Each structure stands twice: as structure tokens, then as C-alpha cells.
Image 1 (cartoon, rainbow, N blue to C red):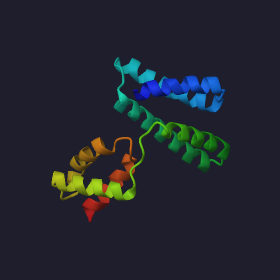
Image 2: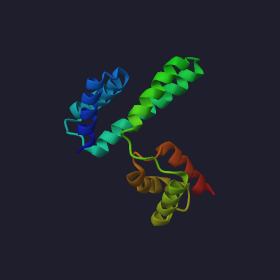
Image 3: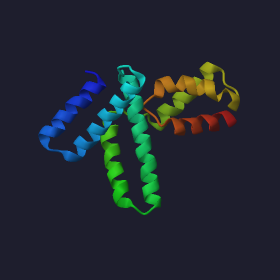
Image 4: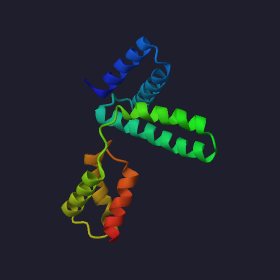
Length: 148
């Protein structure tokens, strides 16, 4: 079953169960997927759907940060609840040890020696870590290793 079909099934389940909070988030996911499909005039595959989900999680994390700075913990809690639902559809996140091994492997396979080679390293990592790691944090780790 494709990820998009699983999300649609979850929407039906949430409707039947009367889970309004979950239903709201699942509908937002489907609307975001549909918007990208209409804009690009293509049917999204699982990888593209993961990209949409990652973008939604990132937006909500940014919102949480802003709400907490503004003293609006009530709104931050809503965003955190939405992140929990969104993360159910993302693959399991890589641990620090796995991520470090992936970075080391990418550095050695690309022959990267300095920060100028960061693009090559990130390109090699992106295909393997897509949806499984925060690429901003990965970039910071790569930069630290290449500067060392």
C-alpha cells in the first residue's frame, strides 16, 4: 500500500472513530499532497509524499519555536500534537551512531577533504537519509567533520 493510500485510509478511520484532532491533521496532509500534485501536474510517489510530510513537520517545529518565544504555549501544544501525527507517517529516525557512520561513509566515498566538498557529501547522504534525519542537523555535523 502506498503512503498516500495509507493516509487516505487513516482519514476514513479517524472519521469513523470521531477523532477530530487526528482527522484535522490527516486532512491537512492530504490537502498539502493534493496541492503539490495540482501545482506540478503529477501523481506523487512515496518519496515525494515523504518530502511533503518533512516540510510540514519543519513548518510546525518553526511555529512551535515562535509560539514558545511569544509565550503562547497553548498554540505550541497544538503544533506539537500535529507533529506527533505527522511523524507517524515518516520512517524511523536515524540514531546518532548510524548518522555518524553514514556521514563518514559519504565523506570517504566522495573523497571529500574540505568544506568545499560539502555539496558532494550532502548529495550522497540525502538519498540515504531522506525522511530519516533532519538535514539541517546533518549539514551541521558534516560541516564540523570537514572542518576538523
